[in-house]
Length: 89
Image (cartoon, rainbow, N blue to C red; front, top):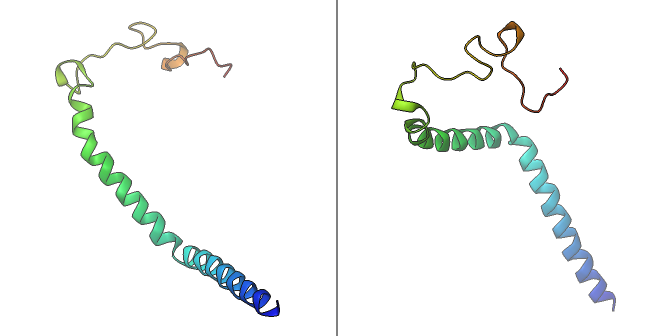
């Protein structure tokens, strides 16, 4: 019975050591991990961007006249666009 408990204890120790080691590795290399994720995300966005922009605007003209919500004056007071849902600020 003692042998069985020693085996369970050893396996448990190895598991906890692995979890702690993974946490330490992630903490030490967190900047590199974050940068790698940012680069991968930006790469995906840059690949998808031309396809998204081609049909987004009428005629494909980025400098063309686009309708502004609230009329030709540019929306509500101060030139700000109205907030959908009428939020109180």
